[in-house]
Image 1 (cartoon, rainbow, N blue to C red):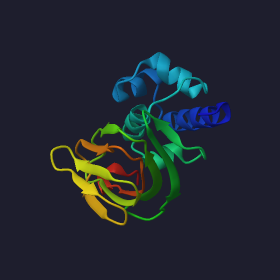
Image 2: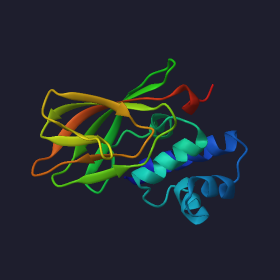
Image 3: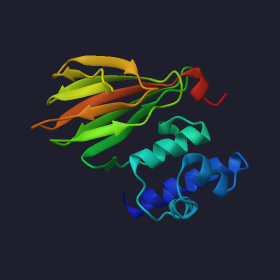
Image 4: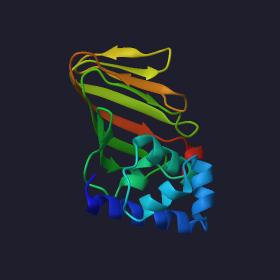
Length: 176
């Protein structure tokens, strides 16, 4: 992520934290990350992982898209890139993402907030995705919807996969 995007993310993260009256220590402890890492992130330094950003969004009780909305560059690590396309304003909250997984990628995703569902539509390649132990193989044009409030995964084999992902948050995972 470029320096401008890191600074923008850091300022937005700090604003969300301060709106709740939380200390650095409180958010870091709740999200399971080191206070020093959170401090560096708020200062526009460091390189946050997707998992770190998800944990912060969950603890701040905001959709992932709300946390990353000010950033226009794709976020990524370990062969996975995601970019927020649009964020709904209604209830339930719905976020739309473009996602690309490099060949031979296995991405384990932590459970999202209660009631959250993901819908994936494969654009190109081949992708295995869904709750761990109950995945589905998708080919171009196929779609799947699953409960994302449990651990789930995305796996590619020889070819990269490009897909559209929508996340519909459960009402428990939304700020009124």
